[in-house]
Figure (cartoon, rainbow, N blue to C red):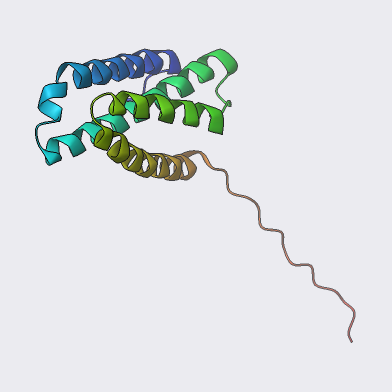
Length: 131
């Protein structure tokens, strides 16, 4: 079930704030063992994904449906997510970076598959001249 850009912006923003606050509230639990530290980085990458979605939907609402995210918005989202993960643990920072790069790769792949237009292949022109 798809929702419009404004509703998706609100939902993504709420999920971003919930993940950030959850990471801060449960910081003592996230740094107990190596597996929970890695899970903290995964939560940071989820926060990155929702933050990118929120920014993209905000821009789609303000500037129109054909507006696309650029490198600046992605980098800003990445920096904010990395800072939030680094506030939990420095290894969360590293795992958040790795998981976020994987996330943005698959988000781009899915976006290209869904929204890309196919380019027309020019037809070969046969000449009538014989050599």
